[in-house]
Length: 324
Image (cartoon, rainbow, N blue to C red; front, side, top):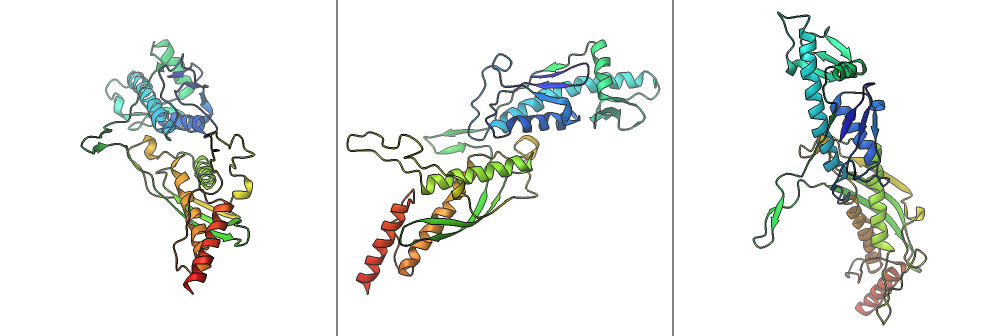
């Protein structure tokens, strides 16, 4: 739901949950860009199901895709009403040369006729004109991902609207006496289409990768012989910390790769970079393999804890000794 007020400010209500990933910031940027006004005019409300009911879960990286496109649908309705009114308003003085609706645009806080640039009005001032002309300045938008589905029986369909891609290279140092490893350098290149907010996207890529590093190296789940979970808190379930961040960490977003299937040609980013942590796991495995001059495939599993690394190294030493 998007409401425009008489002073030109805009309130956006959407169905996504802001959990630190920057969704509200992106929604505000989308609303401002689609309406053609300054970001400072936009306020995004905290999510409230009394305003936007029956919302989808903010999951699977779909927050910006779904809610951003829904905001665009609502903004398109408002922009259509506003430009239709001002095509008529501009034409009042030029009966013999009227303005056409398709030529009236909203850009940089101005409403103007592209064919007759002198016919213009400030957005803030224009909202009062809309109010007195009884033009509704409130609109709702709804969006669902189009043309997706999957038939399990036939193994045929389109399960996803698009795919995102990433590449990661990691350099690690492994202590063969303790099984301790250090991430010396990681380079990431990730595809986010045309980024709506590069700072937020880089943060999501780096955060997802570090979460993946925890999954691949420290987050081991153990049960006792009675089936009781032994990892009950962060003191026994080792989530990644600042010590797990690469000493040299370089993250870049793929440029000039627009995605026509999502809002403003962007791509979702949150969970996908988690998979890039496999580069680090494989780098550790390669370092372990070097103990036996890469003659044997290491006995290696997820997560690659210090214990797993050390046992794998000792196993390779035995194999190398037996082979000689």
